[in-house]
Every structure is written in C-alpha cells, then in structure tokens.
Length: 232
Image (cartoon, rainbow, N blue to C red; front, top):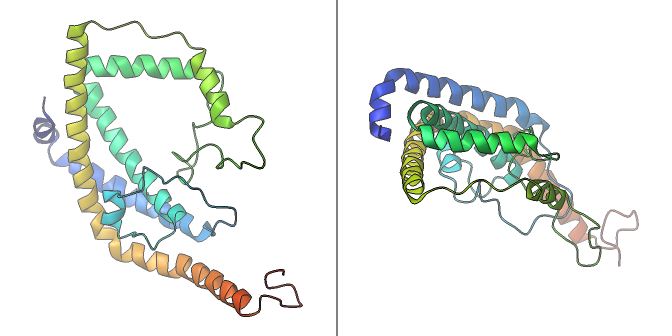
C-alpha cells in the first residue's frame, strides 16, 4: 500500500489522532519550558542534525534566534509523533521491514550498555559526550562504551538480492509515509505558533536579555574590583 493509499485507508481518524498528539506535545513542551535555563558550559561545535533546517521548527516558528535547547525539546517531541505513526504503518503494511526492525530491536535489548535509551525529550538525540578537549583527553567516552557493546553482537545474516530489493521498496514506502505524516503534523503545529511565541517571550527571552545585560556590564567594567568583570 502506498502512503497516499494508507492515508485514504485510515481516513479522518488518523488526522484527529495526529491533532490530539500534536496538542499534547505542545502542552508538554509548555510545561517543561519554565524549567529551561541557558547553558553555562562550553557550547558544542557540531550542529544538531535533528534541528538544523527542521521543517518542524519552521512550522512552530522557532527560528535561529531561539536557543537550541528550546528548539530541541520541541523537535524531539514532534519527531516522536511521526515515528510512532510510521511504526504503526510499518506494522500494518510492510512485513519485511517490520521483521528487520523487530530483529534489530531484539539485538538492541540484548546489548549490555544502552545509554541513549529512555532519555528525556530535551536530551534525546544529542551527543552522549561533550566535545573533546585537546588539553584534557578523555580516558573513555560514553559513546565509545556503547559502540563496544554493539560491536560484541554477532552480525546479522546476509540477505539475498531479491530480499534486498524488496526491503528497499518497503523502506521507500515507509519514507514516503513519514513525509506525508510530517507535512500533516507541521500543518497542525502552525496553529500553535502564537502560543509558542508567547511562551518563548515569557520564559526564554527574559533570561537571554539578562545574560546580555550581564555581559554588557562586564565589558563596560572589565576590571571591576568587586569581581564582576573579566580578570586582567
């Protein structure tokens, strides 16, 4: 079944369900936002692939002037909605891809170390370790330990040429359906732009303004004897 056929098959019920899920995701983000605080540690060099150029963030009106942590909390929650919709579609219509996913999930459960699982939405998908510091090399990294655990698993059995072709076709259908759901979710998210913008103005912008004011004072008095400016 094509993605368009799936949409016709499920009908308006899916759209109503997606609307409910988007509403709930925005509400959850709103409840979390008052707890957000600007990061005080050294920023990462690598960009977030989930958030950079995300149509979800564009639909929500969270532009480049909004801190990444605020963006990530929204994009991850919306991505979860799309992932669940695609998982349901796959289970119903794509048996070969579902079998591969089930096998991979079973392998993941057998791994002894899974640090990226069950993280809050604000941290899901982010690097497990801070950027390396040449002057203080790591003795080990969380990502490295996770990779060692994954490498200890036996390799999957090879697929025949016919099976690979069939699997590629099902993956393409899943991607097509993901794009369809993504467009619908973004359209629903646009209805929340005003309340999202108001929440950013209430909880985020005052903290950014306070940081800029502190920085301006420090630059104006770099040798402040009270210790509020930069040291010489």
